Length: 96
Image (cartoon, rainbow, N blue to C red; front, side, top):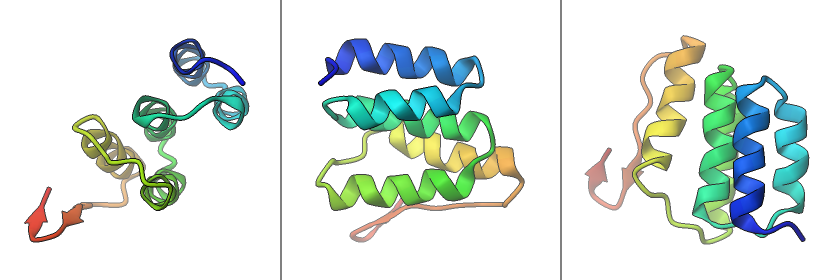
């Protein structure tokens, strides 16, 4: 298993170079934390993959990872880049 810090850095580099396939390969092999989830989601956002980003967001929650501020910027960013319009998060009684 790849170290989370090392793997997250590689995922970020691969995503910024347009190699989402390689970033995803690292994501599959890495010990996950909220930062690894954010790295792949921000990579998806960069390339307008809004549907994939939202699916991954919900998968993140199902696996009991709590979103942080970066998460709550990354996923809506995917919608903005894809031209799909507004997206809002709802947690309890609070809209983000």
